[in-house]
Length: 424
Image 1 (spheres, rainbow, N blue to C red):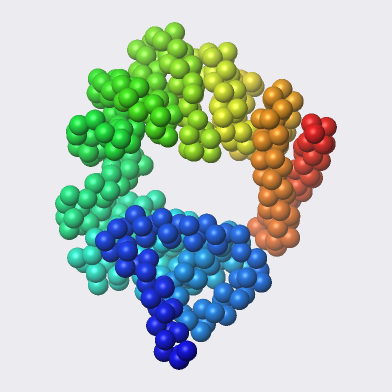
Image 2 (cartoon, helix red, strand yellow; image 1 turned 90 degrees about the horizontal axis):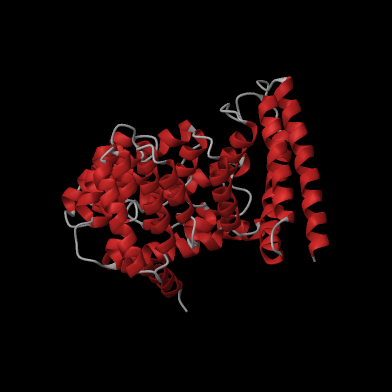
């Protein structure tokens, strides 16, 4: 086979996803995410071989996706390689789904962020009529340059006025932007006016909380009750648990604001019933109503909700434990307010994890133990890397805290492994 044919086949193979994406963006996105997730488990030897292949074929998009997903922004020895691939993708594939994904965003280094920001500004001028480029740039600016993200999203909507994804993204941007709660609600409300459908069920899932944040409590209650009706209609839909938790959380918060604590506690309980979804099992259900009731010292109701929260998504959710910690120790002081406060918080969290695991039914204990063992191993690796870093700005107290935390995590891992062995 001639070199020309080999190169042609490779080009066609690498372009297939892009050609599909022109007509069906979801295909390109899903395919790209599948490749990216596969890249996260690459070994060092596999990385080396891929980088060698890339030197011969720099336009191999699939290899770029694998590597940009594998390299970590938080590892000094990998950061520059990640930046190199992001730079190439922004310069050569600014409209591609991977370039607008979290794999191509920068959060740690402001110098790196500004470098890629400059490339995006160039691409925006070059592709002024390309809605996908505008959308991807908005995704990059989303958290650090909200005014620029808003400008890009409005440009994308102007180019494609019927694209609901762009409008939904604009509403989400406003929801993260202090002072723009009303815009977040109005933008989403406009998308939720159609007849009953599963698409409407998805769109409406955030509408009650957007109305609540905009302080339109009448509409918040209206849409929460409407969402409950849709939950009953689409009970078998995977989004059921998210929507059910959202609706009762908002109704409970409205009751709490009106001084009806009993109704608020009732909705807190309902919001935790039968709500297992990919999101709630990963990140946990909402804690907003639990936090409200914690301020009213409704300890029993809140702890029951936190117990349900932990059974659902495990024992390593820091947001949930913060609520529990403040209830247990009657403090509003942040756990990070001082190094002694951090140490006390860390010790209490590890103690709680061991206690809670012992009370779990065997199957759930095994599942949560496995998760905690892996997360503790990862934590130990991070603290070991940190202990090897040389930073003249570190104080003796900070160094001592790092050393103490590393030893505490190692002991915690031993305790978890002993519990795992005794449970077999």
